[in-house]
Image (cartoon, rainbow, N blue to C red; front, side):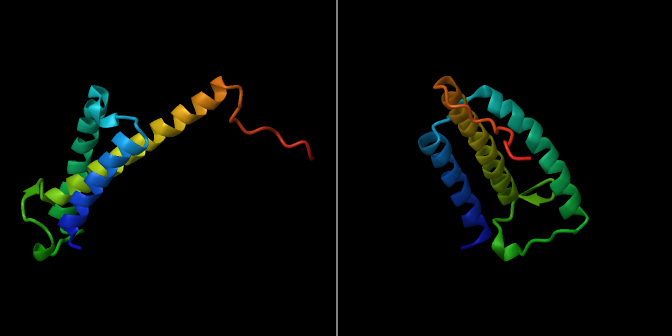
Length: 115
């Protein structure tokens, strides 16, 4: 599978996880897009430095071709998938912990009784 196909597949997979598995609906919230705009700014900055100085190079046959600040578009797709999966997972874990806490099942670790 090519780099481009993997990038698109990762975005689709993460959207399915966010919307249908975790059901956090992270991508439907304006606050997510504001946070993502901040993140993508720094991603483009670092990708631009790394690819502009040729620290990282890409096989032209493995990518679509369009670049943003020297980095292939596919890098933005992978970045989106990584950030979205991380934030959706964090929200899902917090929701689960809060639900357990409300039901009286404390999820915090307790001190060991052995010394």
